Image (tube, rainbow, N blue to C red; front, side, top):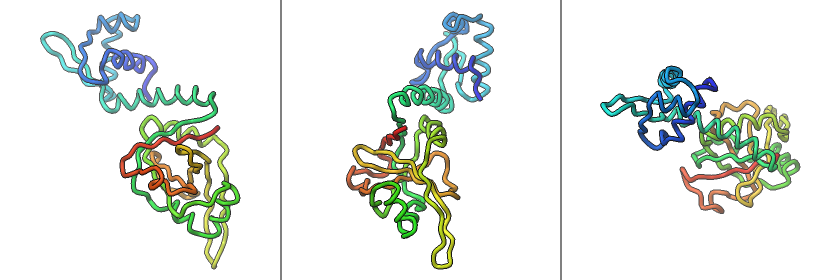
Length: 221
């Protein structure tokens, strides 16, 4: 976990342009920016570099710093936390990601009558026999984790044809104007950055979505 002091230092470097490329930063100027001594500023830079959040290069005209991908992800997570706070006051939470090929678990659930009846009865729509799979952006992964505390709609397990089918849970949401739901099988092994969406519409067709296209999911809270 990145310490608050290091995070503040990382943010200051980003504001100076460190996310878009190399930026010349001295310990003296950074210390002045953070209202700390140059020695303390230098220690924070060393800490950020040790954590892989920045890279530094010393040249004749000074010290040049670039924020790494890991550093950018750290800032994105911090931004997502604040965004989630303020968007929750507006009554919704936003998840962003890209379209990917699916793992097929949601499609499997939709196709079985015992699940299908529950989707219709509890979500209020007839699900299209297929799913939209989304790989979340780094900023949205933390938001997705927080959604675990929301009230998901349970899909009960059952027995049919001498087989036992496990339960699942759904979280109603929207993509554009289309009603949807995030589906999570009870024994899912999904990576934390992937969500699977069911909807009454064939979303790929209706929204003209292709692999790696960006998509935004709105969850009411």
